[in-house]
Image 1: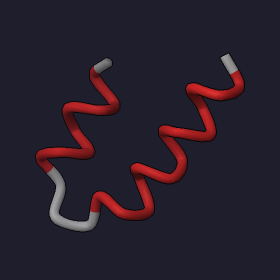
Image 2 (image 1 turned 30 degrees about the vertical axis):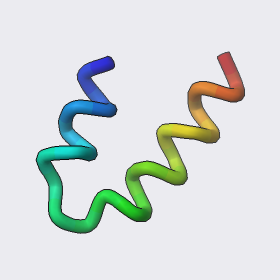
Image 3 (image 1 turned 90 degrees about the vertical axis):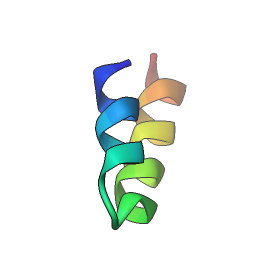
Length: 27
């Protein structure tokens, strides 16, 4: 969850969002 919050706080959340989604799918 912390990663998602950081993504929303970051300006370039596009790349982070992609990695986050991939990470969530991995789980």
